[in-house]
Length: 148
Image 1 (spheres, rainbow, N blue to C red):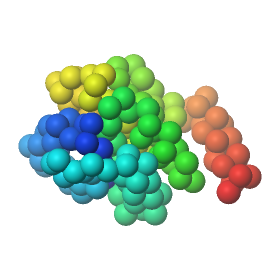
Image 2: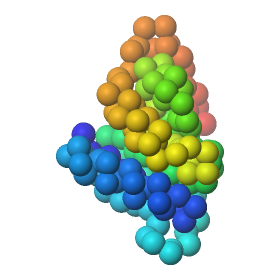
Image 3: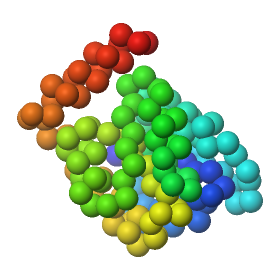
């Protein structure tokens, strides 16, 4: 699995901790985020990561900012992308199993590093379960096409 990861300056430290965690696990990723001390507009980072996933260059993505909310809003503007804010185990698991989200978003000002690493591990092990959620995800795709 190839991951795309990105952050703004508000979540640089969390991004660095997550990247170190991924390296230790041998998981390949590309960093689209802010460099240390760099001020970036989070919409630019979110769109780069979401576009890289939508185009098939990467399988999934992780976006971090102050709350995770802005990144999720922006990433979800890219057709074909489903990004979810993941701050607890249940929503993290459901974002994959029920919603087939390709991008998890977290906020450095909301959760700590250890919880973030735990959630990343959980999210990476979950797959879309289909079942009763499949018609809903398919409907999202249909509506997306309507507004494309």
